[in-house]
Length: 128
Image (cartoon, rainbow, N blue to C red; front, side, top):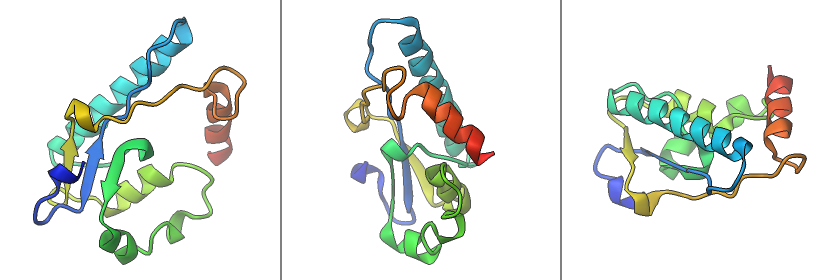
């Protein structure tokens, strides 16, 4: 991720896929993750960054402090990564890093575990 920084770049968006495991749910999780990344990375390339995934994004401390961190969104229980990137990113201060060496591979939660798809869906519903 650090290799993508150059003068004027304050935010680097990356890709964070999930490990491949047997089962239909894993296929759905991996497809949704890929589809979402395709969208937010493409929009960033087109000059319209609007979100990033917290497990693989980077921003400069100065930018974070300039926007007073998460202060304006601290009352919202989820989505702080998306909301901060939406607020702080511009066409000129954001780039992407899609080199496979920069991917952050994640282990998907199993059904019923804290952080599982079902529990994450319930968390997002609570935010709405």
